[in-house]
Length: 90
Image (cartoon, rainbow, N blue to C red):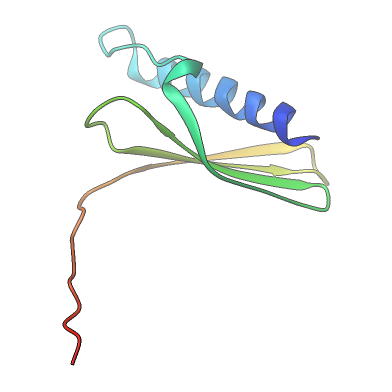
């Protein structure tokens, strides 16, 4: 599976899963709300991290494609905190 085809499938799976779980009361997610943060392909396997451009939602999606089994795995994460740590140089 090529990168472009994989990213397209990732977005489709995320939108379908998110909208099915949130129901009709939550704002709908669509593919234009998603962007790729990181993408890799190793042999027949693919992995991508995607996020949304929706202000304040803090959602991250990890999609893995197992080419041996033709299976997709979707993990959803929510950012809890963003902590700035300043290092003091001696």
